[in-house]
Figure 1 (tube, rainbow, N blue to C red):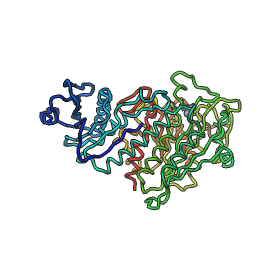
Figure 2: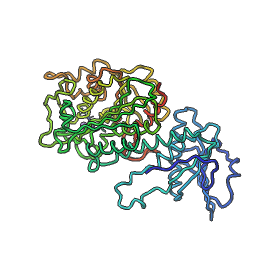
Figure 3: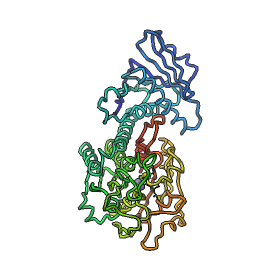
Figure 4: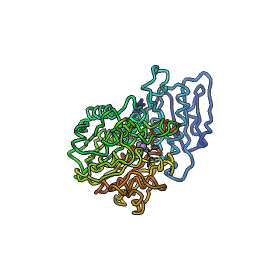
Length: 477
Ligand code: BES
Ligand code: MN
Ligand code: ZN
């Protein structure tokens, strides 16, 4: 469900005023008796509310917090807007106009909070109208936000919501094959976004032993998905490659996960691929002048009768052999082949996104992304700046050689299980074997899926990675 955002010369009807002045004497001229006014103060969770009886116009004032830190201040604006959204929907408003009245202009973030917060995944309700939020349309005053910013926000919000839709869709409605169909449909929608899907036989012919081994326990075939955006005006000759973990459902395989609080939400195990799809959509929508390729090996991980079992040795596409000691460490098996496949593009930079380890989620929780890799420090810096700006913050983890010792095997080149410590890093060290280019790995197991809503991050899929990487790519040269 997407909320329409328009830029207009004049605002009529219900109104949201963004202010940095809690005094509010200036507000008098906006307020006629007979209006509903909700006053959102700068103190979170203390929304003061004034209701004038018999009113037909709703005016709310979002007073920005007095927060000196730029990163927190932007995020406060998004979160406070999402809090206010509950009031707006509570009063069953359909449309609202937004005007900036603050010296520091946070209109972009306020709208981002409103639009992302207004997302709902309604597909599987029989009565959608009953469940829908009332707010359908937001108009922003032309003096408060540029045309370019409105367009960027529309692009980014829509792509983030697409990524959320992909994650939220349960495995009953999204397996490797239906995922590929959805990606192809996106390719149809955007001219210049070329989508190619390899089927099981082509994956066998390519020798993708990692992806195929995970797929053995499933009755459904795997797919390998290639999305290419190669515009004529591209500034980079060698492409940037985005790789996504596309485990459509992770039961753990024979090393079965317990259901409660562990397997029951594992439809989220393709959040990395959802991020890649979302980023590709945003890139095509904004027509970014960059060569960018998205790669996703897709399968579910099941304990069917032919499933791979602990102790098995698998030959990946690269020729590197892997001793499988836990079939639940399947993400790295599939990514091994995608990362190897990326070599054929002679890439400038490869970024992979994966809900790879519980260890990453336990280390920093849902509030940030664990990342690691050998790319240039300038690239890392740019990504960290984007991370703070969009509030998908990055924490770099070390890839010291000692961590590589944990995945040495006695009977194969490497094993898919590390030791008791630093699981997110030993997983990263595993992936490193399949790279020979500038590369960064993003373990999004923590922030990609929420068990309860948090501000503008709605429950379940968050679409994490889309806003981060779009911002990075937009500034890339
Ligand atoms: N998909 C899981 C990781 C995960 C955990 C994602 C929590 C989202 C939330 C992954 O395939 C997995 O099972 N990892 C194992 C690896 C272990 C067996 C080495 C883990 O982290 O426990
Ligand atoms: Mn697993
Ligand atoms: Zn997994």
